[in-house]
Image (cartoon, rainbow, N blue to C red):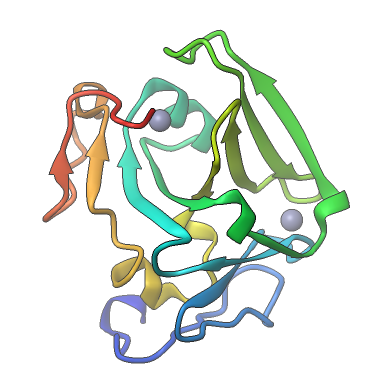
Length: 171
Ligand SMILES: [Zn+2]
Ligand SMILES: [Zn+2]
């Protein structure tokens, strides 16, 4: 079980269509639900910039849940292992406070949102839930920050130990 898994080593539960994810000293994989799209990313700085939960109204819609659990890596530290051609994108700027366009990349087959890129940003916003080693969700990728707390659903609790921010902080 994820909750009781030994946190000192990787843990890959049966989840989705792929079973070839990996987790090394400072890099790991993220795979969509069907397995067609797989990424590799750094699990430490300087490539890993921040881990956070976002409660904004866009994140509620785009996850079809109450919040998004994200991490940002530098774009030049992200590797597409497979399935880049299987991504489809949706862009809009209507709800983005900065006015910059945010582009979302989904697996065409299963619909998993793999990442978002904001126009002009060097970072790529990945999703903690797509990371194959579930222990990373609770260790290196545990959210350090929680943003848009003002929009948090009333029955969701704050993330334990995460700095609470009323709205957005990333530029
Ligand atoms: Zn997929
Ligand atoms: Zn958000």
